[in-house]
Image (cartoon, rainbow, N blue to C red; front, side, top):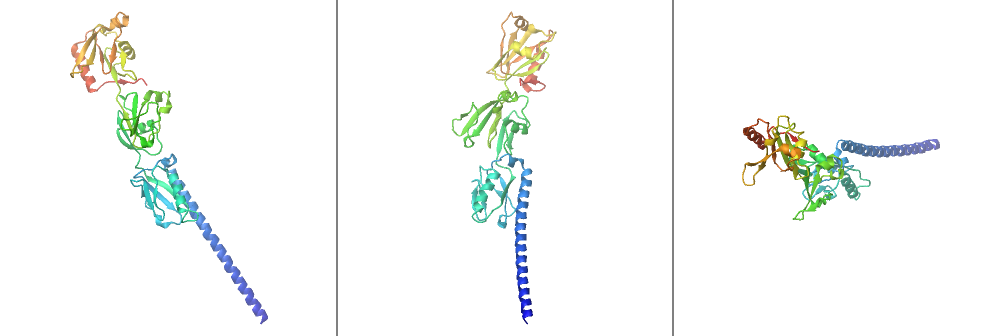
Length: 345
């Protein structure tokens, strides 16, 4: 009987030990599964971020952007994206309304992690941007595709212009940017506030950026910026020259006849320079005034050089040229068809 009791005690102890070991193994398995789930969640987020370059470059959230949010062990979050409302907030289970406008996805993730600390011991929160709708930029004027463009991430002025198809051939040398002051003043020496005090306005030299004279002018674009690219002020030369067409005045308001002839690579051998004309727009009519010009004397230094204004046309006839030819060329220039445009960039 004693031996039987001893065996029963041994069996009971062994059973308790076995159950304890099962409990330990089970707890370890649960802990491993939880860690594995957390690691998988983080891996999913890393993969999502790799597909979204705008997140990596610090896209700033705003109204109408949509976020996908996941919180480990918080099933009430769901899979449906959360849209930032007009107040810049999203509403989440437990933590309620959270202001996210003006933050990056990483900053929202940090803010939500802090909020969920009140409900979860070690909250694992991941945030990714599903839809970008809050960074409209307006491009006007001499760009290939003017209009409102949605930008993603941090973009410079010329990146945005490039995405809009680039500058047109007739684009001027100066670009104007208008920015809402809530996004800060433009970081330009030319920046100033408009009369309403709500906008910062500044000018940028295209040449200084393209020639790397002042790359700092290629500033970062902000939401709701208005980028205006005016058409260039030009003078034209047509007729018996080696390179006829329109020449951009660049940053100057005038160009001399000799400068224009130099850009046009000179007159042809058959040119009738003595009978040249400047066609200048009249202030009170649609017709142009004709100003006679003897190019031969100007080239020889026997007559002073003449300044050309914006939109002037220098016509160099052939020695046998007729006035009808001049009229035909004026019509071509006024319609803009068949005219080569040369830029000083």
